[in-house]
Image (cartoon, rainbow, N blue to C red):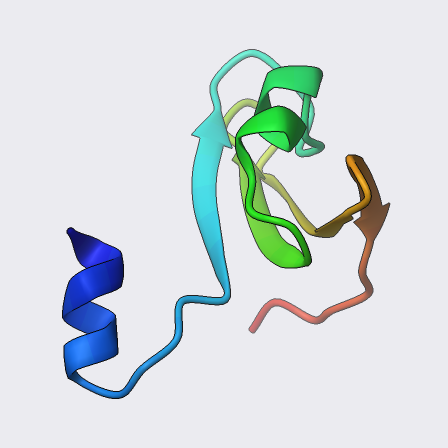
Length: 69
């Protein structure tokens, strides 16, 4: 449904975000399997207050450098 709404507005969804309550700010196997090919994934580690940004490509997660402001 969100994808259809964005298409009607002429927008493109480039990624997703979610939090890990008791895990690091990196994607697990299920996160990677559920992601769209060549998408971005932002993960927030609620315990350590860490943020990770990843590019999901070829069923792997590649860390990206960014600055949180």
